[in-house]
Structure formats: structure tokens, C-alpha cells
Image 1 (cartoon, rainbow, N blue to C red):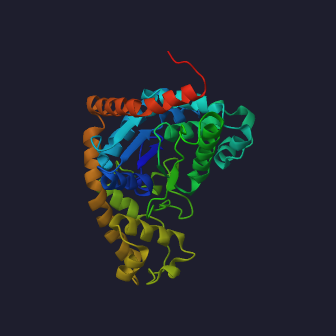
Image 2 (image 1 turned 135 degrees about the horizontal axis):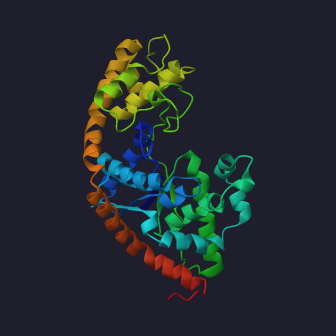
Image 3 (image 1 turned 45 degrees about the vertical axis):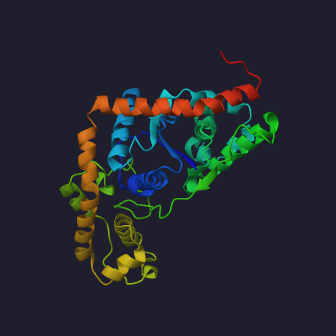
Length: 338
């Protein structure tokens, strides 16, 4: 197995990022050691598809690197790098642009969502974003790509591009690209806002009380849990009893994810309890799980030398791994490289 996945360096990681994606990356790294390869990257080239502050992007890339390592990614057991240090990503995107079709990209729901009504005013990079995503995984002959529901369509596009390229420019016996399969991580928790159980936890929410940031200290975490929105009813003993109670469901989901348990088990243990009793238990569990991550992050985030070294080493590995496929793509297209 070769697993490839990326994350935009937005800075200020929160509980939803950790439980929804990063913890599963760490599990994949641990489970695949010696039996495959994991490549995880900071998608800084993707970040320039929308208006951005260059200084913030540079700082966020290093901060995100520190956060990923603090969460458990080990640069000696996975390949951790940022796209911009591996020019093959941009080169491969350009080579694949000749195979991707405008109609395919026009159908991308994320393009429609992000562009809104002002499609003419959006960058070409935003429109071509899915082709760069395809390049990100095809470059390394990825066999599996972790995807949530919102990314399935982009992986299908990557497979379509790979299949058409292979059909047009390669033989059946020796295709240029592997068609990656989706990998649906087990128990990828969907964490919602602490102020509104119908909205995902997000760093863009104006209220800092809506999210648990990985930089929060123990007292701040406990305070945010204490003030999280709930309803007056006690917790039910069955999951069905959470229907129509989004905030209660969210807190139970967070507890189950942190405990690596299930909502059923949480309610078996806490059913009948009021939130005055449940919230302190949740806060205690949260602090025990997240405090070591926060401490490691605080220790790492200002160590520019170590972070630069981690990214440089990972980029060197990624360049080496991606070169054979890039060479094969150039050759298949009849292009002569210097």
C-alpha cells in the first residue's frame, strides 16, 4: 500500500481536525510500518488558489508541521513534506491538464460552492485545483487515498484522469499511473461547533468558544466544555434518544472519539446524567488526551531549525519517490526533458 494525503496549512488546528483526519493518519502510519508507505503533505500550493497573505502562509506551514508532529506523525516513519519543495507536483499538474476536461471540472461541487455566483472572478488555480489534487496522488503511484464524503468526487476525477492518460498514452501492460482506491478511515468523527451543533467545528467561526484549539491549555478547554451549548434534558440511555438534539449528540460524539469508544458505550455509562455531571467528565477526558499534544506543540512551534529540517528531509524523499512517475509521464507524452 502507498497512502497519500494532504492538508491545507491554515494554522490553528482544532479538535475537529485532529479527530476527523490527523489521528487516523497517525494510526495508518503505525499500522503500515514495514508494510507500505505513507506520504503526508502540507498543501501550500493549493492554498494560493484563493486570496492569501504570503507571510501567514509561510508561518502557518511551519505551525502545521509542528502540530502534525505533536499529534504523532513521525518523520522517520512517514514522509512529511510541503508541496512547494517538490516541484514535480506542479509539473505533473501541467502534464495532466492536457488530459483533464473542462466539463469534468465544471461538475465539481466544491468548485461550485467556492466560486459561488462570481465564477468569472475566480482564479484559474481554483478551477484547476482538482487536477493538482490528482497530481498529488498519481505522482507517487498511490494505491489508497483517505477521503471523506466531500472528497470522493475529487478522487473519482483523479481516477478518470489516470485512466484516460493510460488509455491515450500508455499500453495496457505498462500503464503510467496506478488508479488509487478510496480509503474510508474507521470512525472518522464529525465534530461540530460547541455553539451550534448543526455546523462543523471551524477555525473561521468568529467565536473562539465554538472550537477546542490544540493550543488551548487545560483551563481553557475545561471552560469551553463547561460553556458549550446544550439542552435541559439529561442524556438518554440509547443513541436514538439523541435525535433532534444536535448539541447533545456532538458532546457524546466528542467523548466517544476521545475515548476511542462508541456513542452506545458512552450512553451506557452516562445515560440519565445531566450535563452538569457529564461536562466535567468530558473536560477531564479531553485534557488527558490533548494536553500532551499541546505541550509537544508549544515546544516545537518556535523551533524553526528543526521544522525546516523535517520538511527538507521529507521533500527530498518525496522528490526521489516521484521522479520515476514524472519521467514516465514526460516520456509517454513525447516530451524531451533536459
